[in-house]
Image 1 (cartoon, rainbow over the protein chains, first blue to last red):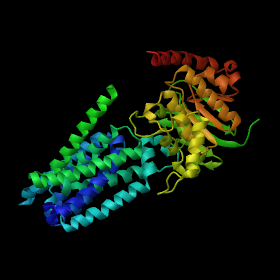
Image 2 (image 1 turned 180 degrees about the vertical axis):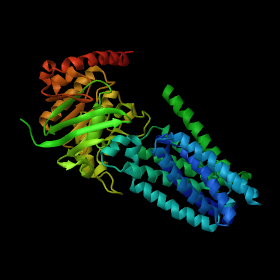
Image 3 (image 1 turned 120 degrees about the horizontal axis):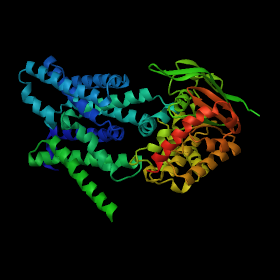
Image 4 (image 1 turned 90 degrees about the vertical axis):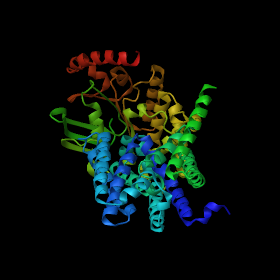
Length: 269
Length: 255
């Protein structure tokens, strides 16, 4: 047996990482195609404020991150629907506002600055057994919700107006997508960290889109790329002693660049 | 001869801020009608369509679909819609023609229900109707504008609607493809008795194709036989607008 599997924390990290790797592209494909991938970044920053609050109050930071992220996702959606603020401006407000809040809260909690680095860039060492249960439980909820409303999400993403005429409750589906995004972002913090989550949600999907296949096949490729990157990233982090989050994201980028140029030479030949 | 009354629009007004877009409009649409809605740009054609489809709420007035007030209307599968936006889709969207037409069946389904064998047959028939069966596995973005438009009509037909709405379906499509689309719509109206409502800026085509004509410029300027519009007192007023618009479009499509 490989030495890497001798450590419980590595196994926990791999298990949590595979679940995150599986749900990130499921959410990502809808966000990317709706030109809404910036929401992942904004919610990640909100989650950081949640993490800081958890430390301040002495609650599991993953739980406070989830609450903060889901709560603000609903607020962002309301703000966007009010049409008084542009969608990207609404995201900017949340992104910088929550980062400001996070840094102020962090200044109150002595000692947290030591852990800050692992929450910013991810550290599988921080995945506790309760975190793993949370990630598994909520991860399954995300997958089930996506499967249940797959058709509605697809139709709205392709043509929102026609979907509405077809009797699809567009408001409900939009809120559902943003809440599921918020859950995914918060759950991914221990693995890739606040600053790198958006990459895991966006890059595997953008890479799969280069292949120009049907919707289901695009999702399958994004899943393969994402889960492979998580496994390869955690393994290389162990053997090369580098941060897992950074390794995972760099691997997705290497795959993206390779596919991009392979497909480009395809077009020219 | 008119069939059953399918759509009733009564005393509709719509304002956007202080600007009145539609003022006190009443129209009835009957089974089997092929109604052309024309009027100058900004005259409220698309707004009217969106009100009938429940996408916009009128400031005043009542809309009834199949005798039911629009707020309580549930049978949206009876309505087929080909939006103006349809011609501006994301060309890199990862969906095959089959996938896009399948969306036309989504409205009827409950959570966790997917496309089954029966649905596949409906998709096949709808694609055959618009003569796009051979393209079923192609990506939607790889098709020409006219082909895409046929696919969107197939998507609307897949749900087996009783009324088909189209908003400027031929905008940005070449003349030959336009003719083919109108032939297809006429066939659907005549052979399948599909009630069709088409928003257009092209009076000549509507005179030739439609069985009913409506002209809107904030208010209802004409409602009747397409061939009698030219002798109507409001025609001169419409023509003034139309000449300007025609020139504008000419520039847009042939730069």
